[in-house]
Image: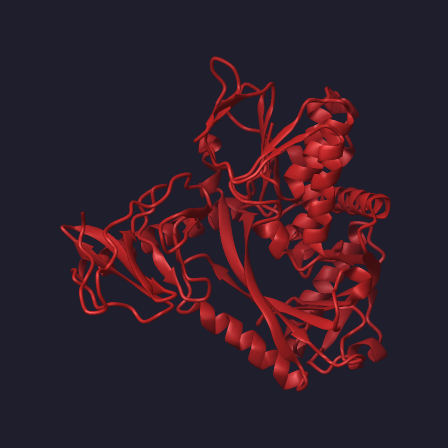
Length: 492
């Protein structure tokens, strides 16, 4: 059984179903509803400053294993896309610096990539000059892949079903257990299986306390319609701030109608931004300053998790009897790490001996904790503690009733010592508990997506309290709806 209908879950399920196994996929939403569908579609081995970041804290052999894993993941995507007829294009990927101050990071990435076996090169002047935004320097990796991740996920689901699999969407898993035999609990009842795979972004089971070993980032994407000929030919990702991801989208890799430019960036820890809406507006202003003819067509955001030691978690979960497996911590590179995780997890379930797994699977499966990893984890968990204290402190200093928020806004107050969240969306004002059911963090209003976000471990909830994602598995308690524009909500 696989929990999660994103890239990791669907590739794992497809591989196992094609091996003749009885496989079910369960998801609280729809196929590709979260990180997979919100991905920018880069299936690339050149990943900004990812390799040099890992190399700064780990031996070259581990970075090499990481690249090999991503290469196998990329190859699996390519093979499947060709077989299933998913459109994709080959493009050059660039890791670039906005200014001369960022060139040290570019050179570090070049060194780490070459050391890990990638045939990177310094970008030519003509390539740097072909884009209107500032590029002080860049490294390039040719022959990378761009596609539409939603189209890829839909094709995976169809192939999985054709192989005999079963797909249950809009069915939330609230608990996993291994006794008396492995099973998951849903609102519709318990489902039993020989093996359980948690492919849920962050594990929904607290075994191993992985929520405390990960940091979650929310990042933003805006697509633009632009005149033909104005988009860059390659995929660009900055290594310095402000973060910028730029890629063209055409009919060859999934676009319908006009040529589009997709611009992303401005990542930040979940629930800890002054204004998420401002992150979008900054991307729009930046893009239109360099592409004056660009017209915004869509905007969306994504949530990604990074392990404190920078290497994805892939393997068996503690206290699971070897029957519960999971994968997380891709740090925004799920289109290569996810398929790689699927290869390893499927092989293990199929009974492949550890000695017969790819070298990268054995290397990445051995966690290597450096002092800097411990320091990074301690720093992040200290920030979690500060966010928890600040959230409760702010809520208690704003007793209810609170003024009715303007449309698209939310505010937190307190009644009888308990934080409540009041929001107005689409003209409807609602009141919910503002305490995250995971570990009690006080939620903050996300004015970009109109959601309640937890600044502790990144659980998110709709205005009506419905759980959207994160380690929390239950909804928020719903309080009374505000009866009028001038009346505060009351509990009841």
